[in-house]
Amino acid sequence: MFALDPRLQQDTLPIGDFPLSRLLLSNDSNYPWFILVPRRDDISEIFQLDVADQQQLWQETTTLAETLKDSFGADKLNIAALGNVVSQLHMHVIVRKREDAAWPAPVWGKHPAKPYTAEQVAVIRERLHLVLTEDFTFLEG
Picture 1 (cartoon, rainbow, N blue to C red):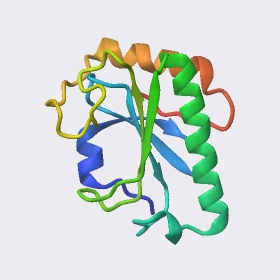
Picture 2 (tube, rainbow, N blue to C red):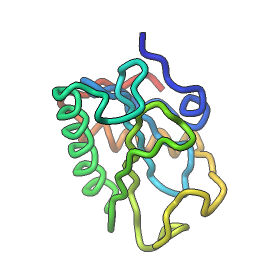
Picture 3 (spheres, rainbow, N blue to C red):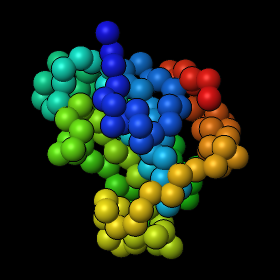
Picture 4 (cartoon, one colour):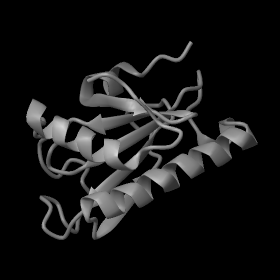
Protein backbone atom coordinates (compact mmCIF):
# COMPACT_ATOMS: atom_id res chain seq x y z
CA MET A 1 0.00 0.00 0.00
CA PHE A 2 1.50 3.32 -1.09
CA ALA A 3 1.93 5.86 1.70
CA LEU A 4 3.38 9.32 1.24
CA ASP A 5 6.19 10.32 3.60
CA PRO A 6 4.74 12.55 6.37
CA ARG A 7 7.12 15.39 5.50
CA LEU A 8 6.00 15.37 1.85
CA GLN A 9 2.40 15.19 2.99
CA GLN A 10 2.93 18.21 5.24
CA ASP A 11 4.83 20.38 2.74
CA THR A 12 2.95 19.69 -0.51
CA LEU A 13 -0.44 19.80 -2.17
CA PRO A 14 -1.64 16.77 -4.16
CA ILE A 15 -2.30 17.36 -7.85
CA GLY A 16 -2.82 13.91 -9.37
CA ASP A 17 -1.34 10.70 -10.66
CA PHE A 18 0.69 9.60 -13.63
CA PRO A 19 0.76 5.83 -14.22
CA LEU A 20 3.67 5.44 -11.77
CA SER A 21 4.00 8.66 -9.79
CA ARG A 22 1.93 10.94 -7.62
CA LEU A 23 2.35 14.58 -8.66
CA LEU A 24 2.62 17.06 -5.80
CA LEU A 25 2.99 20.83 -5.70
CA SER A 26 5.41 22.11 -3.09
CA ASN A 27 3.48 24.61 -0.96
CA ASP A 28 5.97 27.38 -1.69
CA SER A 29 4.72 30.10 -4.03
CA ASN A 30 8.24 31.48 -4.47
CA TYR A 31 8.64 28.94 -7.31
CA PRO A 32 6.44 26.57 -9.31
CA TRP A 33 7.99 23.51 -7.64
CA PHE A 34 6.60 20.08 -8.43
CA ILE A 35 7.49 16.69 -6.99
CA LEU A 36 6.95 13.25 -8.51
CA VAL A 37 6.77 10.35 -6.05
CA PRO A 38 6.72 6.82 -7.49
CA ARG A 39 3.91 4.86 -5.83
CA ARG A 40 6.20 2.02 -4.74
CA ASP A 41 6.87 0.93 -1.17
CA ASP A 42 10.27 1.12 0.52
CA ILE A 43 12.14 2.74 -2.39
CA SER A 44 14.70 5.45 -1.68
CA GLU A 45 16.88 5.29 -4.80
CA ILE A 46 16.13 5.21 -8.52
CA PHE A 47 18.23 2.06 -8.99
CA GLN A 48 15.90 0.21 -6.60
CA LEU A 49 13.08 0.50 -9.12
CA ASP A 50 12.85 -2.23 -11.72
CA VAL A 51 13.92 -1.24 -15.22
CA ALA A 52 10.35 -0.65 -16.44
CA ASP A 53 9.64 1.67 -13.49
CA GLN A 54 12.94 3.50 -14.01
CA GLN A 55 11.97 4.16 -17.62
CA GLN A 56 8.44 5.18 -16.59
CA LEU A 57 9.77 7.60 -13.96
CA TRP A 58 12.07 9.20 -16.51
CA GLN A 59 9.21 9.44 -19.04
CA GLU A 60 6.94 11.09 -16.47
CA THR A 61 9.72 13.47 -15.42
CA THR A 62 10.38 14.40 -19.05
CA THR A 63 6.69 14.88 -19.83
CA LEU A 64 6.24 17.05 -16.75
CA ALA A 65 9.37 19.10 -17.46
CA GLU A 66 8.35 19.77 -21.08
CA THR A 67 4.86 20.73 -19.96
CA LEU A 68 6.09 23.06 -17.23
CA LYS A 69 8.69 24.74 -19.44
CA ASP A 70 6.04 25.74 -21.94
CA SER A 71 3.15 26.39 -19.54
CA PHE A 72 5.11 28.40 -16.98
CA GLY A 73 7.63 30.10 -19.29
CA ALA A 74 10.67 28.65 -17.54
CA ASP A 75 14.11 30.06 -18.25
CA LYS A 76 15.55 26.86 -16.73
CA LEU A 77 14.23 23.72 -15.10
CA ASN A 78 15.94 22.21 -12.07
CA ILE A 79 15.42 18.45 -11.93
CA ALA A 80 16.82 16.44 -9.05
CA ALA A 81 16.28 13.30 -7.00
CA LEU A 82 17.53 14.29 -3.55
CA GLY A 83 16.71 12.42 -0.40
CA ASN A 84 18.79 13.83 2.40
CA VAL A 85 15.77 14.85 4.49
CA VAL A 86 13.00 12.70 2.98
CA SER A 87 14.30 9.25 2.09
CA GLN A 88 11.22 8.22 0.06
CA LEU A 89 12.20 8.43 -3.61
CA HIS A 90 10.94 11.66 -5.12
CA MET A 91 11.91 13.74 -8.13
CA HIS A 92 11.92 17.54 -7.91
CA VAL A 93 10.99 19.47 -11.07
CA ILE A 94 11.33 23.18 -10.35
CA VAL A 95 10.49 25.99 -12.76
CA ARG A 96 13.18 28.63 -12.57
CA LYS A 97 12.93 32.16 -13.92
CA ARG A 98 15.58 34.82 -13.95
CA GLU A 99 13.34 37.01 -11.79
CA ASP A 100 12.55 34.33 -9.15
CA ALA A 101 13.43 34.89 -5.50
CA ALA A 102 16.60 32.77 -5.53
CA TRP A 103 17.94 33.12 -9.09
CA PRO A 104 20.58 31.98 -9.95
CA ALA A 105 21.22 30.15 -6.66
CA PRO A 106 19.57 26.86 -5.70
CA VAL A 107 16.11 27.18 -4.14
CA TRP A 108 16.83 25.05 -1.05
CA GLY A 109 17.07 27.14 2.10
CA LYS A 110 17.34 30.41 0.19
CA HIS A 111 14.01 31.92 1.32
CA PRO A 112 11.29 30.80 3.72
CA ALA A 113 8.43 28.98 2.01
CA LYS A 114 5.51 31.25 1.17
CA PRO A 115 2.34 29.11 1.14
CA TYR A 116 -0.01 29.36 -1.82
CA THR A 117 -3.45 30.90 -1.51
CA ALA A 118 -6.41 28.75 -2.57
CA GLU A 119 -6.82 31.02 -5.61
CA GLN A 120 -3.19 30.52 -6.68
CA VAL A 121 -3.54 26.74 -6.41
CA ALA A 122 -6.74 26.85 -8.47
CA VAL A 123 -4.93 28.78 -11.22
CA ILE A 124 -2.07 26.25 -11.30
CA ARG A 125 -4.48 23.31 -11.35
CA GLU A 126 -6.44 24.89 -14.20
CA ARG A 127 -3.25 25.54 -16.15
CA LEU A 128 -2.24 21.89 -15.70
CA HIS A 129 -5.74 20.68 -16.67
CA LEU A 130 -5.16 22.26 -20.08
CA VAL A 131 -1.90 20.43 -20.75
CA LEU A 132 -1.87 17.16 -18.77
CA THR A 133 -4.45 15.36 -20.83
CA GLU A 134 -3.03 11.87 -21.43
CA ASP A 135 -2.09 9.28 -18.81
CA PHE A 136 -2.83 11.69 -15.96
CA THR A 137 -5.63 11.62 -13.40
CA PHE A 138 -6.32 14.73 -11.33
CA LEU A 139 -7.09 14.33 -7.64
CA GLU A 140 -9.85 16.45 -6.17
CA GLY A 141 -8.50 19.54 -4.58
